[in-house]
Amino acid sequence: MFRNLFYEDGFLDYNYNDFFDDGDGFGRLESVTNAWIESCLRRSYRPGRLEGGLEPYFDRTLPTTLSPKSCQGFLRQTKLPIDERDYYLSKLFQFIYVTLDVRFELGFSANEVSKHLREILDEIPIGVLPPDSRIDWSELWWDFYRMTHSQTQDVVMSWLEKRISVLVHGSSNKTVHERRHGPEPDLHVVRKTAGVIQSHYLGDWKRADTLQSVCEDLDKEEVPMSSAWRQWATSPGTWVQALQLHKERVVKLIDYRLKQARRYATDRR
Image (cartoon, rainbow, N blue to C red; front, side):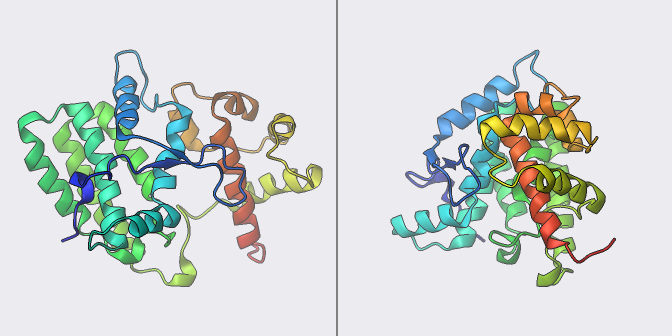
């Protein structure tokens, strides 16, 4: 069983965010405390807040903390006899457990939930943890988080156990060459997005003074947005509206589609 670092000194506050990442390198890292994570979650569950009502800055915290660079940084500074799997599974444990505690006020059931969660996560092999890209563990957390808004604790835990089992066993049937980050892309949408960028923006399309024009052109060409954006507290009707609501998610989606367009350049589906 993996060594759970949740209770080790300094581990809970070893979280990072690259919210200002410009796509080149590791961005401008900022340290994020566990207390801040808890407070964001607590506010998001208040009456009147729709599911997904976390502030935009939160979105980059888990992916950055689960990155290989964050993992290696922790391994270099600790004297504990641990490996990469211990780190990644402990971070997943932290983000999931803290969310459960905030949402359901675990109280006397804390030890029982902690043990069950550790057993669920221990089914995850090192082969599908970062830097492997067959499973988006951050996306798993977001799905889990949305579930906590409408389902009971037991239902959420059952869903989590089944979802991880499906992800792990499904990914084990893929070869290294078949690895994909998330679901297979819609190549028509991917190429349409890339076409807008490549036709009009040869320079840095991520600049603040350029992004507005990029989104206006994406709206003009009727390029579909992410269906996941419908889950936002305020659902955008256009790319321009999405940019105003969550700039970093718009940049992330466009960047992802450009990478997919390059990856599938020879695929004529």
